[in-house]
Image (tube, rainbow, N blue to C red; front, side, top):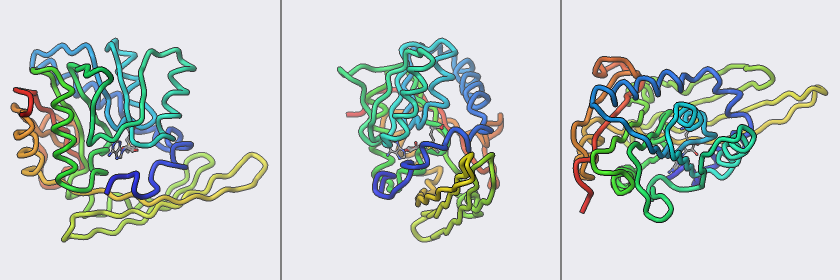
Length: 258
Ligand SMILES: C[S@@+](CC[C@H](N)C(=O)[O-])C[C@H]1O[C@@H](n2cnc3c(N)ncnc32)[C@H](O)[C@@H]1O
């Protein structure tokens, strides 16, 4: 199942930036850039897949990467990203695309592919995840880097998504259920938005995330042609432990997949 097969990131697109304003994209990208420096890589071109409303993509653009591409499965998220780029005059090319068939126009390739904020957990089959890795490999230059993060199985199992909060005029209640057999976490999300005149609208989405294991990720990356695969716990400088919520994974493309 991909996020297009449930109703995720439709109505949510309109309030996503408002709700996610505390998410540390800038610090995450700085951590990725440190990894790149340690690897003596100086990427210029970047493709941010599953980029959502472009929160990370805009930072990459502001840091001088060029050209910058962003793609996402949700037309609503891409529409928000495009509007922001148009308003800011940022030369970012955004388009709608399933990460399982990642590619750039005219077969272009880039030095760096990023995928932030657990977007790949939304690819809920192992075959799907491996299609992402293979198509990302086709889109990268040999020697290029793929950097992405994932919600760790620990986080999904522990109910990371059980949340209730009010941010400005938007209140949300999220309830998660975890299936140990499928390793799927299903989250029913309800949102209430209060308008200045006191009226309220309500919308709901269902999100499904899969807890990919480290072995699955490592094996899939290797068979797609990656090597020098590193896992970091919560964007810190240490390998993840059993209680890390999030893994940052970075890998270098050694050779194009056959
Ligand atoms: C939590 S958001 C992260 C968005 C963005 N990367 C960020 O850092 O804000 C997850 C995003 O993954 C996208 N997504 C889910 N499945 C996808 C797929 N198969 N291909 C491309 N995008 C996908 C969703 O539409 C959503 O925008």
